[in-house]
Length: 123
Image (cartoon, rainbow, N blue to C red; front, side):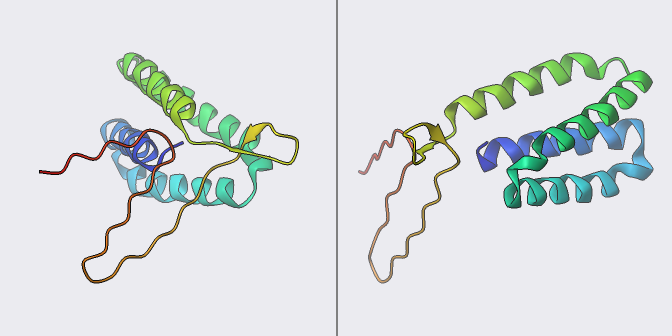
């Protein structure tokens, strides 16, 4: 998932907790960051993390059903981000994983990098 999409999803989750359980919002923010870190380090934890957060969301929705529409919108956004996420080919030729790029420019140098389409408009 792109980091922009992740930031939007994380912000929405924390906002929901602030509305329904304000005392837990900062802890949830920290735990979301920890979940993302764990997932970045070990993709095999994905199912367990998804299940744990799903349980927490169901509990929160039980307290505030108005969040259901927002959750649907957020799920659509997450799915779109997954589809748009740049993928790289593994040893078998299947697309998997993420693409990580690093660049450095100095002086008047410029760096242009893209995982997908890139549009540069200069005057």
